[in-house]
Image (cartoon, rainbow, N blue to C red; front, side, top):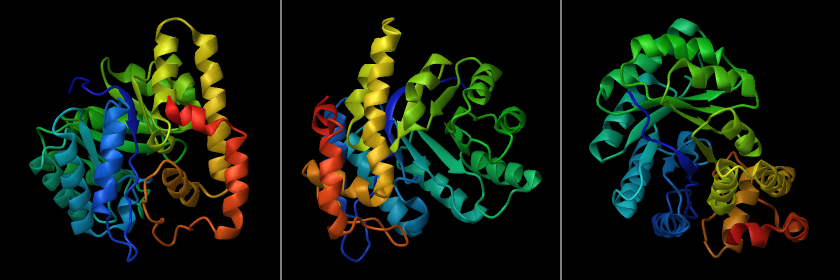
Length: 296
């Protein structure tokens, strides 16, 4: 299946209510904000979107809400990965029914048997044969190149993948398997380097609060200004380093609060940013030039 996805895509967070449900109003507000920032698509219910911590009905609600707000202005890929194949297939069918442009899935969480991985992915892809399917690959867990080679033969609607890893050699090998694939880089810290080996787009957590940085760095690289593009990557990485130092998910929800969005807190077992650490987090963030990057 030929490529139709490119550019910068937030791995959209899922706002929460006090009881851990889906904060629908905040979800609509953040989606609109990111559309206005010029993102090229949305990736829902992945790691950042806490899909595995949501009930099946909540995951359906997230997909329905975002697809309604987007109103076909940009494509939406719904991550349907689940512990069991049956649940993943049901989520894929729902995503297709509500207008998702593609579906994605992590490896089955409790299986590293290669035959079981192939069967899991084949079942998802076969359930929605007219919808592009993109595995969600974490670099190093499996031989991603071999996996994609085999899935090419078994899944006619295989359209690409999200590759979250730092091995640019492996990523390049996947890109070269088939011309025109939608291979997204998923490691924000490596975005520009993935672009240098040919990745047409990137999906990431930090695109929730500074998508313009990635749009600009990709545009400058494409225009031949690689030095400035790398400089932007290094500036973005300073923010990412603070995010990880203070606990990525608790810090993410606090950053969205700083931008004016009350998204609640991460879902347990993920930790919130404690009130004791909040002041230190704000100080560290100011030193990175966060506000300027978020405004881009």
